[in-house]
Amino acid sequence: MVLILRAVFVLAFVFAGFFRPLQAQAASDSLGVEFWLAFPGNAFCCGTPTLSLFITGPTATTGTVSGPGIGSTINFTVTPGTVTTVPIPVSAHLTTFDGVQAKGFRVTAGAEVTVYGLNRIVASTDAYLGLPVDILGTEYIVLGYKNSNIVNATEFAVVAPQDGTVVTITPAVTTGPHPAGAPYNVTLNQGDAYQLVNTNAAPADLSGTIVTATKPVAVFGGHNCANIPPGQVACDHIVEQLTPPDSWGKSFATMPLATRLNGDTFRFLASTNNTQVSLTAFSWLPSTGVSSTSASSPAPHTSHLRSRSS
Image (cartoon, rainbow, N blue to C red; front, top):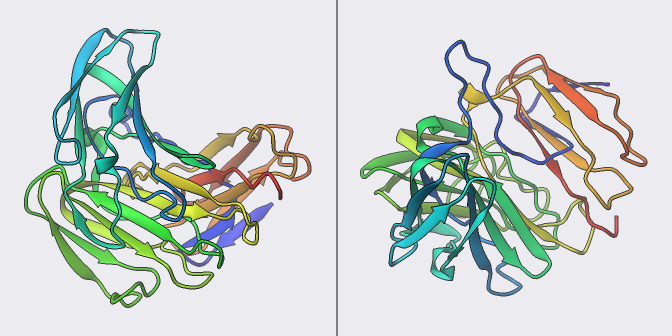
């Protein structure tokens, strides 16, 4: 099957992790000794989240979690072959719809580690893979999920590792006072996090929003509580830390998600018009085998778990 992407993105199937760039020099990966992270809004309608980090690594080491979103510094220890759980104060949860909050936080370690962030409310939970500062970029295209007139809250967040970072945002759809396609600037200092939530009627979607910055930033895309596929009453928080376009790839392998018999939902994001996407060995009903995708131009894809009732 071949899809032609003529817009900024097209719907198809999704779970975003880290996409390793194909470069002549040493490949980037998700291991690092410094991370700047945040927890974008989760199900504002439905309770107080429990926030956690899961940290592991190949080498015994120690580290800290600190920053304006944390308060007092949190120490942690990593033992190879195990995962360390670090509870994060709920004060780090982003709650603004269009504004800056000093809620970013920094993870540092003496040796390379991998970090996952978990944002949990009963029945609305997602986790993301944290990306180290050495692979952050200054240009991103947001990939999230659209509103469906049940919970309307497509969103993204930007975190600044450095003072005096000017972020330019060109929203894909009109959001509050920000017209679609009209750039506006936000100035962030170290640890500041800017979040934009669009509550407009379906099919409003902040996917395709362009984010550029004068210094490297961390960007997170998702939805406060998405209904997947649209029309399903049950919603769930979705979030991923996004990779800059210069790290996107062209070939991916996917596995079906457990417990779902009616397929999964893919999304592809293209940075250039007429990008061709091919899907191979793919079965919708049921999703029982491995599938592969390839694109004519770099185009990350994510895979969303469908509602159990769909």
